[in-house]
Picture 1 (cartoon, rainbow, N blue to C red):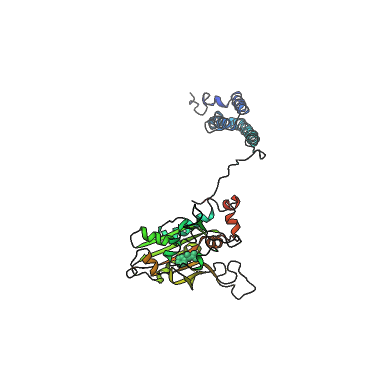
Picture 2 (cartoon, rainbow, N blue to C red):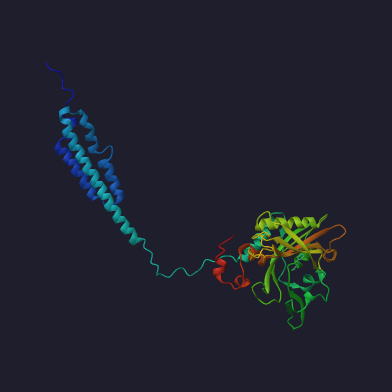
Length: 372
Ligand code: PHE
């Protein structure tokens, strides 16, 4: 009696029969040829070349064959699997090519079509720079105050200690507003933002820490550095024990906030009727930092080789202004400054000509992008 033949199982190896392998191969090739897109081909790959595909399962059965039959079956199954895998590769390439060609057609852009003519606008850089300037002071605890552009002569001049014969009142500097009857209306287009000092003091409890950005007007001709309409940022502090040292500190904080830290500032003696003492504020040129001074080989276009850039005027509040605004100058003191917004924009962004700021060409404004 012979032992049972355990090493040959005719049921399990049906899959390795030549007809069967040929059938699996044909089925796979037919499915590959029929796959119409890459997603379908992926499914076909899984079904006919994946770990659980008929050919992969058949491959596993090879070990169960008698040794003599293994090489033959191995070649058969191996050949079929290779054919399937090559067919898959070819079909994959074909379908990718088809897809690329289709995408080129479907996603083609007709550059001759009219574009969206409604331009998305941008805020004017004078607005955003003025806001950024004010924000630096808001960060130090200041509040933003406002006043009208058409201002009472009293706020623009009298309350600020301009005597009636002060040259700034003459027709050369000031736009006077005519009354309906044709005479003097007592109104002017404000020549500076300083009237907001008085309005802010009248409208608030002390102490007062305010900045007032706004539009101002003088009868200047438009040229590269002048415009009849321009902007200032007024700043004012009225509190007990306030000195010029606080003013210096606030100006320094502004300059480093706006132009970067480490830039020196200086005050040059000046005169304004509403401040005493008064000063012009200069900041160190942030381009050459003074290196161009006296060096004809390295001129600086930003400061004109001066080493310093003038950014505004300032001073300790004249007690007369405090009195005009109903503040007791024995108890309170304060200071104020007025900074030029156009100048700040010119320096911060290298804008060389005032015309660009006022002409309203959207290409100028858009270059600064959208800033909220
Ligand atoms: N109002 C002044 C000007 O327009 C600037 C200034 C403001 C000076 C506040 C001193 C204090 O030139």
